[in-house]
Image (cartoon, rainbow, N blue to C red; front, side, top):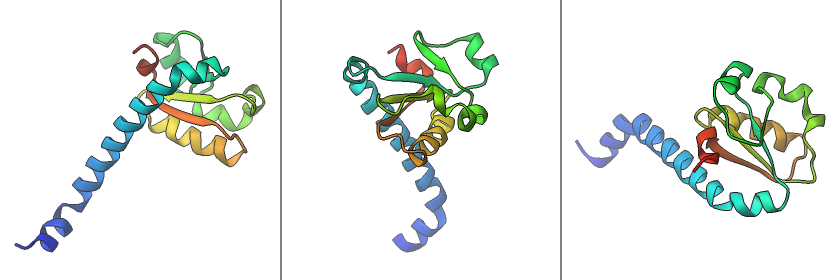
Length: 118
């Protein structure tokens, strides 16, 4: 089996590993930026469900579940950085796309809400 055959056979696993690697790296990057973002008035938004948020959440985060985000954009100012979180970073990644599409210039995905506690 040559390299081309190996890559063809394992590409889904390689892509999955790259995806998780990117999520880990990006969450780490945003955690490092968090003090500066908060100094600039960042709004931290948790896009998990209300039940998930009620069971545990980071201090000073606003809960706007992902399915409600499009109807609640008025609660999120465009003039401050927005830091998004959820359980794993997937829903907050989708929320980031929604906000970017709606003209929010500074949107960051910190991944898991627990990253606010680190």
